[in-house]
Amino acid sequence: MKQNKKKLIAITGGIGSGKSIVLSVAEELGYPAFSADAFAKEIYNDKNVLEAVQKLFPRCVQNGAIDRRALAREVFSDETKLAALNGATHPAIMEKLRSAMDAADSAAVFAEVPLLFEGGYAPLFDRVIVVMRPLAERVEAVARRDGATESEVLARIKNQYDYEKNRIIGHTVLYNEGDLATFRERAARAIREAAQDP
Image (cartoon, rainbow, N blue to C red; front, side):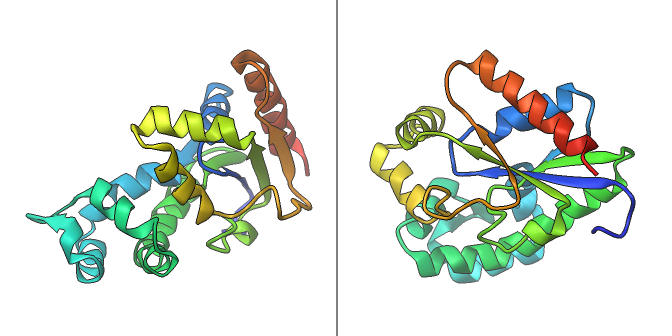
């Protein structure tokens, strides 16, 4: 992915940290901006992926369609099952994301990649912006957004990369604290720096 001249920049962080806000700011600033989650929502249209997931989780597929709530309940309570699901879906998601980024006509292209470190994808990017936010605020935001319980959100967080325990070295860390306007200003600065930094 680094073979072309454009700069590829990943935006990552824990669930509910504010990654999507940062991505939207990048888009508002005129940069091509893509979301791995957007490709993930369409990934079950890929017949091979759907068949692989159906073999792994037959109870979560009804009439050829994924029951996303049932699938989430099953995998987020079991690390082995989550790893199996990620193995079936993530390579296809990243392939579609990379193709979109490579086709974008810009010197800098941004992508929101939630499982960047878990999947070992960080080396594919020239820069990484890590969004950090207090845990309680993340839980509240996700519960409100997804209609999930606090325990369901915490189960998801437990299976993600721990940005608090693991030191973030060599990447831009962007703190989502205070009001939205301040966070968006910080995000704009981080985006401009990442795009222009050699």
